[in-house]
Amino acid sequence: MQGPGGEDEAGRLTRLMVLSQQGDNQAYNIFLKEVSVRTRPYIRSRIADSDAVEDVVQEVLVSIHRTLATYDPTRPILPWLWAIVRYRIVDYARRKNRQLDGPGSFDAAFENLTAPSRSESDSMGELILQSVAKLPEKQKRAFELTKMQGMSVREAARELNMTETATKVTVHRAKRTLRKIMRSLGYDNG
Image (cartoon, rainbow, N blue to C red):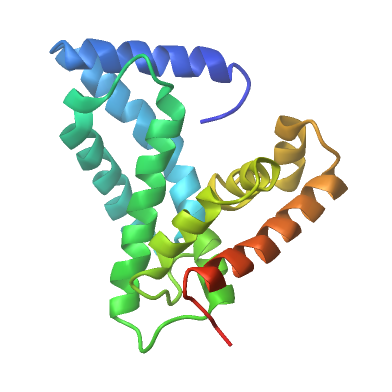
């Protein structure tokens, strides 16, 4: 949902959401259509199974419907929306894991942020999210942009006002820091 005119887009989505909260069905339908159109490519980049992609898109829309009344229009809409998308992807990975044998490794969990159809333990997604929240701000932002929002290194570098090389190094450091944080939280992949 980031891109040229990102602020205009956020403003438009916020306006549509507020109208939706006020009972405007037309605004609500437009909002849901725009969300599905904008989030589908991101979800598709994370999940190979096209049927599963559509299921996750629908789960995002259902989550929005359930939380419609609780959205606070004074808060930014894009982080709220992307959090819903990420949680639905993590939920998909958890369900998928239940079909596979055994928990995944720490490195496989990182892969799940970009390809959640692979094995992931039930608690791994939540553990990763808790760990990401504890990263130093610069590492956290670089990791979120590249691994959780699906931006290319070039796009993230532009967003962070950094060189591509510096962005790659920061993401690498974030992964190393995440391993340490996760070990301190009790996860040790040996």
